[in-house]
Length: 149
Image 1 (cartoon, rainbow, N blue to C red):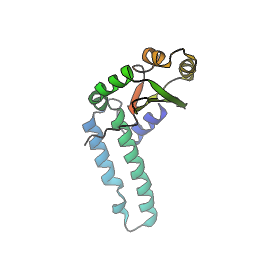
Image 2: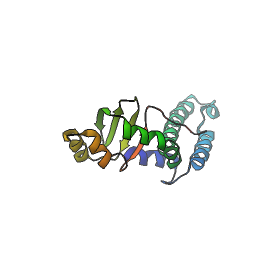
Image 3: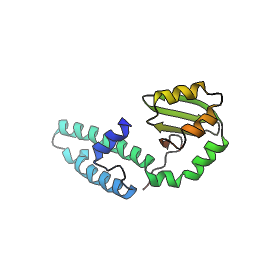
Image 4: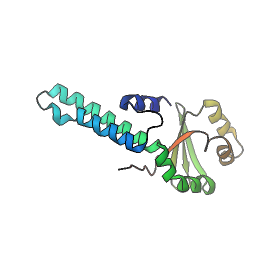
């Protein structure tokens, strides 16, 4: 969740920002921080390159978890979580990554460690995930990232 908050803070985006709002914020920030604007100073140009990379990363991440993006991919998500088996999962800093047999991968944000431990110890990881993870946490696809234009 810290990653989400940091990206929103970087862009100055509200929690409920639409894709159009994110795009507008992104374009305006890139106009201000584009490295070509700082041709006269190599130090400023380098700083602008770093800042623009951060802006691009934040924009793509926030687009991937936006409600419109999740709504557009909900049918595929539902099909995966209901018909494909969990192949593997990984947990790092409240981010749970689940890999499915059909080749898709999803990241779930803000998952507490006790939930992860219960997932590890569950008789059926799929059943536990359906009941306690899939529709309880903000998620994004990491295998088929969708970027809105």
